[in-house]
Length: 131
Image 1 (cartoon, rainbow, N blue to C red):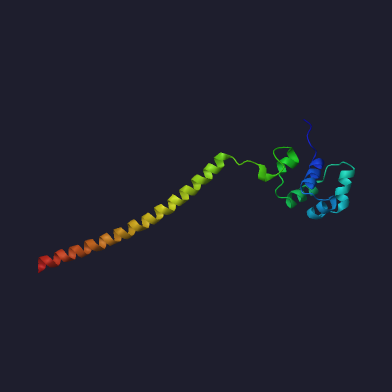
Image 2: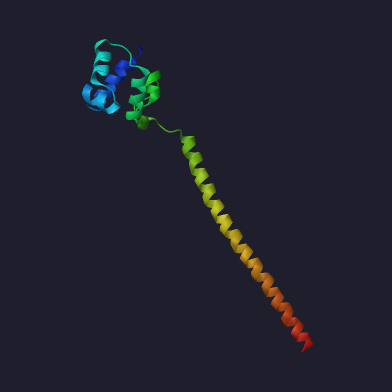
């Protein structure tokens, strides 16, 4: 299978977004003649045009554009299920850590209350023995 050139991929981007060459050049911030000349002479775009294209179209995959790897749109890239699972585990751990922290505060309050009550009980026993 022949690899698609970056020039052809720029054409695909323009077509996908239903833009004219002029609209595309305005969107990426170059003159229309830069894009027109690139297509007319069938030359590869400069690194500046590639960079500006990726900056203007943030949903375009750089891997697709430059390396012929994966889908054109980043949103079409399927996330690794292990990453999603890890993210859920991290969220669960954070929630549990919050619960543990709250329980530790409660234990501390109960410990302080217990010490206070022991002191009061000792005082009452002492008063009872005296009186």
